[in-house]
Image 1 (tube, rainbow, N blue to C red):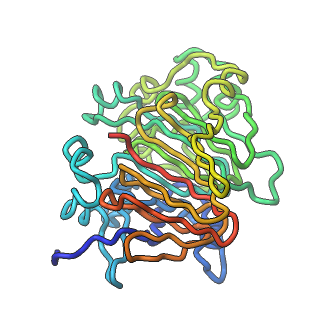
Image 2 (cartoon, rainbow, N blue to C red):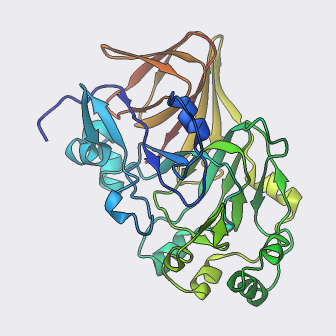
Length: 360
């Protein structure tokens, strides 16, 4: 790679990734496509240094984000490997290497996703040779207009024995599987966390930001959704049913406990006449990543000691850093490198930005 100056603001181009479920019409709309439609490219992986696990599509190399700098396209992972101190900072680079140490997505589901589960860090260390599991957090942005009762499944409200559940999965008795859950209704603005080990699923018609540990680990407990049947090696990560059962917590999680323990109330941490900043996901919820939300109605200058990724969720405006000025609108994504210590946001109307970073 030829020597270059890393710009103070790095815009992220769309990075659509194939998934086993249909969706993505909302993403098509944000990207300005003339005929928005649902397809199996239902996710946009943002500032991703994580490779997607799509059986049969390994040659595609899906998951890694690209960026455009001076009208040239670069693989973000390679850029971080070449310029880790400028983009990530020395402390982060020494601790985690040339990666963001989180995975960030837009997820736009046309149907309910598979009932699934992800590993905890101890499980990943023991069985997957990884120091990352897959704790997740969701920021609900929109619900499709044609659907009035958005929901998630999260944890067992009516747990059964491990053997009984195993037989239900093997026989694909979906009614029996779903009888272990109650629908937990959600609305735009909700934020919640999904620790590793909890079985869960996002309901249909949900458009959200998904933040997680930097892996694509998942066991799926339903084999067919939306007319697509998972190949056998994609169900339990190429392993057996007992591996999947060992990943799942079979504890009872009452509805009230889900709302109290896993739904996160925004915490106002800074306020001025034309600016507010809220913690959405903080140290109390997880050490895996941090998520804040900015609400800007005028002009505001923010200082930072971390690289971070921003997603514009409402409004439009301008970002200024150094000598660079970038116009932003709803749906845009950008990375502020470590070397950029001060950023000014100027809102044309009410501007909302969700920011994610990894505490070092």
